[in-house]
Length: 377
Image (cartoon, rainbow, N blue to C red; front, side, top):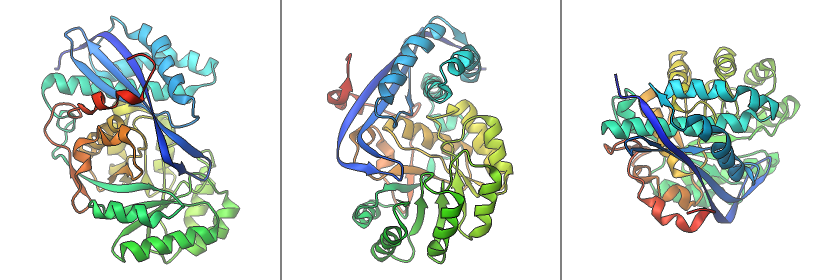
């Protein structure tokens, strides 16, 4: 049995990076890229690093960092946990009422997810093992795909990612049938017949709109259509949509809790399920969930759109869970990701190697990100 974690300190850091090209979705636009990093230190001085989802609203990063400092830090200081999962369960129980009282179960879950990632990273570093092996994985080899292709000239970014070794690409749609189809045609012309293309509606349709839009997307060889409906839509509507199309249906980044994910697995509507380990569950819930998705005959594709620490953790989680899925890698320039992503910057024929460095790997790039650090240094 591995040594328990005796927490000496926990701290959250906020980073913000301005964007030359805003990230467009069907529900809004990102004008900068935020990142909330969590560092947990044990009594022997070992560090572990995690990341908290914080993309929306724009003030979300500072808010989540303050939740860590004001709510979770007092609960963790001096605490001893036999395992990260024990810490997850204790912190979730200790904050459940406050999360409901403040009507903020999402932000609380995101903070807990980032803390959990940091605790697992700490344990793996302390044992001198890469996280993927510490979690029981057999190989550091993972598939990746290029995400975040915006509706404005997506073929240019797609071409750049293809030149970097990517073979699968995901386009944001929901901007009108004519524009969506023109973008898909441009991507296919640029990337060729063998490129894997997926689309993401970002919850932009209702069932009536889906019925109108789906026929125009058939016969384009799409690997999946992501979040065509609201994540809160009844599973009966998701099943009705799945019956309208031969395109596999994907969702999961906005589901929360074991019960809701089990409903998704059992729904009969989803072919691909996409939990986000920095948004809910961390590794303590994310690893058994990823394996359950695979065991159900579905495909586990981790969702991720943030900085490099969460991306690396998601890659190690995928390597441990196994299966035929691939890791989502944002195509848009972002030093908060690029300076930290390390091995995930090296892609060959759609595959990356996570390497043998302890934990999620070397994070020397944090020093180069100091210009983007908000507040205390």
